[in-house]
Figure 1: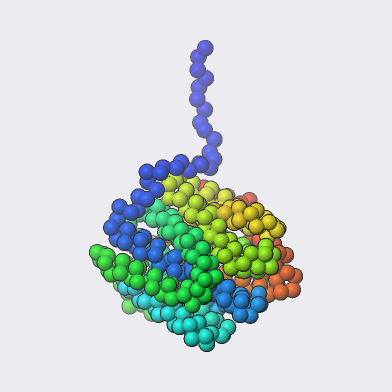
Figure 2: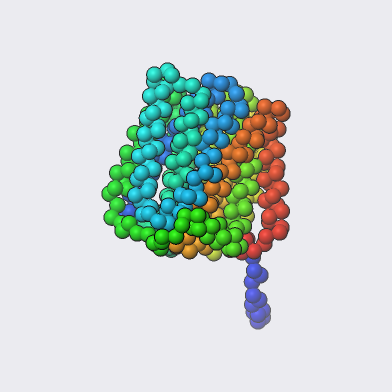
Length: 419
């Protein structure tokens, strides 16, 4: 019997093949190795501070609204600073900018620790310090994002971004767990102090790099003109514009669960400080798993991976909001972390690969504005709404809106799935 003639395969999404041998491919670059391990230490401290700060403000005030105030104060500088940060990054060597931001973050952590040790801490102190740190982060985040491609080749960019997510979420597992122990045994002040010491690792790593401090396109153009050019560039690029829209909706609504996490831990699930830290760690476990899968995957269809994350993330968060069981909630937070990481790492990579070198700093500053800036707005809305209707309903509302958008986006923007 003769073989039937082969028929062309139907076009469809390619499921990424996992290659464990290339999971850590970007580490072959010396400068990236230094950055990788320096950041790993520093980010553990950062997560300890994040968890301790949330718990401290809720413990002092017993107010869900104050959780939103702190989150809003830490991220509102994104709206004020990030676009100008993009201009700065396209004019100055990014490595030197990052060294400055790390030193500034270290000083702020020590000041907050001293305030706690002296027992002079007040809620408004935490809000002010959150605002100042937010100003630093508004420059630091786009600087680190756009600096990655200077440490590795374009071929290793996806891997490096995924590995950045890996260390971020490895720290997200370790940091909150250590914070829970430190909060119970030592108090919040030591969490802030340990975070301050952790910045030394990344500062030394940046100083040890052998790298040419270069500027993609030196210019004397007026900063206002450069900001306008960056905004016009994003608006004219259909792919980047759509990707940033995905991030905007996700961070405005899908993180409702995160803004209310201390309330979920204390009021809904009946967990204490250590339980709160562990819940945060389960999100990190899921995100770390997602990051490792992306780092190991070879796929030409990043848009398909993005679609999975954009729907899976809010769906899992919605189910978490419905849960009243600590083990079930912990499991769902793992899925939440995986969905978020698949979405975020893919968006980040696609934006950078579709950006011109001379405009990458400004593009990533716009991405940072949306990624960080929309979260506090959503947090403020969610936590204020929770004061009226309760934690679960407020969280479910946000997740349902994000899920609805993900489904509409899937149906109306098929070209993104083919990227």
